[in-house]
Length: 81
Image (cartoon, rainbow, N blue to C red):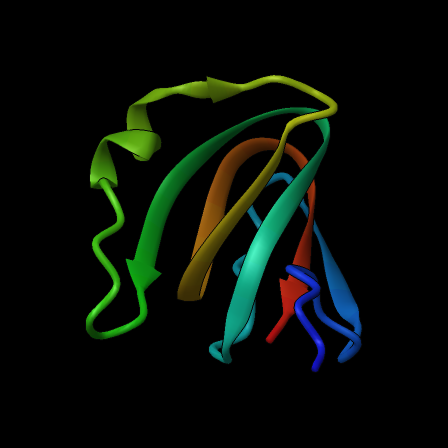
């Protein structure tokens, strides 16, 4: 049984104000301090949209289920689900 909490399906780098293509994502790794301007969580996932007001520090890994995300600033890696 595979109990890993990360994906084998690849990742996408998102920088500055470029929007992430709509898809299924399972987490983010913050490369440079980042601010999320918008995020849409997967149906049934109880994500807190207050993440949009926070500065996420470089080095943070946050598992979460979402379908799209746009940054105000910074660079992240979005893990494909």
